[in-house]
Structures are given as structure tokens and as C-alpha cells.
Length: 148
Ligand code: HEC
Image 1 (cartoon, rainbow, N blue to C red):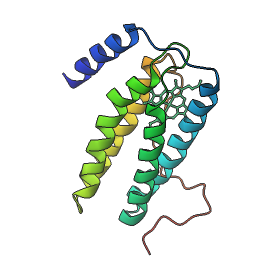
Image 2: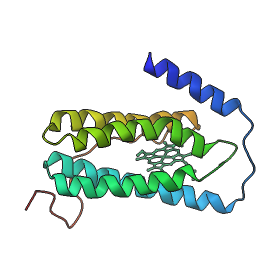
Image 3: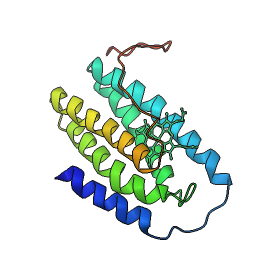
Image 4: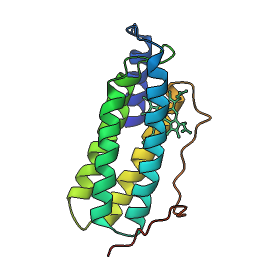
């Protein structure tokens, strides 16, 4: 049901006339997406190790990247800002709520999974379904994710 609602929302947004914007935004979007992936992976590792302080930190970084993405009117004719607001913001808010409700790591895990699903739904909606974000608990960073 929610999926269907989201789909009709996407169709409505894609069919609405987008506003013009310059090429300069292309780089901003790709930079934002790289940041989303980077912070999401580190957030996933923080959740995996039940590290609340670190999870809060990366959730905040994602929130800021999301706010910047919402500012992007258009990219290749797709209303990026509106799509991000319609799809990623609700999933992010549910995730943040779960994280705020201290203690319920299972809910945090579930909501984070839904957040990543929302990333992929938007990739599908914008014709980038070949960019498929997948959760990973492998740590390639020179960083410790366990709580101190
Ligand atoms: C508004 C729709 C939308 C949302 C929401 C969205 N993306 Fe994207 N994403 C795109 C588009 C469009 C591109 C292609 C950008 C380009 O061609 O410059 C992209 C590209 C990417 C890339 C390829 C760039 C790279 O560095 O490899 C990654 C990774 C990525 N997104 C991750 C994410 C993650 C993680 C999330 C969720 C936290 C997310 N995206 C949410 C639309 C979205």
C-alpha cells in the first residue's frame, strides 16, 4: 500500500514540469550521492556495533547531505529535490525516531534497511536502477566502530 502510494507520488512528480537549473548542479548531486553512500556505510557499521554516539554522528551527516540534496531542483529533467523530499525524508525521519527511542536496536536496524530501500527506489525513479545500494558490515576504514 505504502509502496503503491509512493509510486503514484513518483509518477505525479516526474510528470510535473520541472524548473530550469544549470549544469553546475550535476557535480553537486554526484558529490552528495558519494557522501550519502560513505556516511550510510559508516552509519551501518555504527549500528552493527551498537554504537549510539557514532550512529548519531553519521545520522546527522546524512541529514545535512539530505538537506543539500533537497535544494537541487533538477538533474537531467528529474526533480531531484522533490523526489528526495518525498522518498528519502520520510524514511530518514522514521529512522531518526527509532534511533532517538534509545535501546531498540532491532527497530533501528529495520528502519535503516528501509532507508536504504528508499535510496534504491529513487535510483529506479530517476533511471539509475543500475546503482543498487547494498548494506555491508565489512569495515574498509582505518576506524574502530565499537563503542569505547
Ligand atoms: C532524489 C533521488 C535519489 C535519492 C533519494 C538517492 N539517490 Fe543516489 N543517485 C540519484 C541519481 C539521479 C544519481 C546519478 C547522479 C549522476 O549521474 O550524477 C545517483 C547516484 C548515486 C550513487 C553513484 C555515485 C557514486 O559515488 O558511486 C551512489 C553511490 C548513490 N546515488 C547513493 C545513494 C544513497 C546511499 C542514497 C540514500 C541514502 C541515495 N543515493 C539516495 C538519485 C537519488
